[in-house]
Image (tube, rainbow, N blue to C red; front, side, top):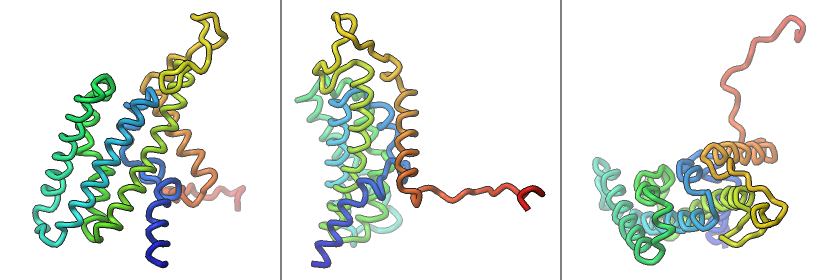
Amino acid sequence: MADRTKLWSTLTEPLVQQNPVTLQILGICSALAVTTSVATALTMSASLTTVLVLSSMLVSLIRRHIPDSIRLIVQIVIVASLVVVIDQILQAYLFDISRKLSVFVSLITTNCLVLGRTESYARSNPPLPSMVDALGNGLGYSLVLIIIGSARELFGAGKLMGYQVFPVVADGGWFTPLNLMLLAPSAFFMLGGLVWAIRSVLPEQAEPSEFNPPETEEAR
């Protein structure tokens, strides 16, 4: 029972409490670059989560046989091999989305989230907990991408998953698309707003101030 509770906690904590994007600020490059639509956000999320779970499983299985001196090289080779397979599958079956994702699928190899979980967790834990931890972090990452991707596509084009939700003015409707939402700066500000909102609700996630101004005479 305790093991199940621990596994459940490992799976659910990265969704909000220990979210890798909003709390640990990992993997934000793809969060900013591929969230112009829900379809690209979902594809990137599924790709990264798959690579994360499989790489954590493999690293955990061979963790006792990896010399410390080459552990990072081994982990990168494992991750890169999985990324190549995922990239080839996307090009074969989802070519249009693969083209929109551009190089960002390949950059999963150097994603801080993937290497961080394999190095800090999978390398020192059995396969099942490592896979659960990887899945939880992948879902937490996916949640952020889907939220930002949904907002950008909805307000930038009036669509969700390619289906028209708001009738646009060009077609006789009432909605004027906000083209700024489809540009990279909007993702940056939306991610910052999401981090601010979460840390306002959960103030324990805010980092302590690095500098405290000196007290003034009036304050004394």
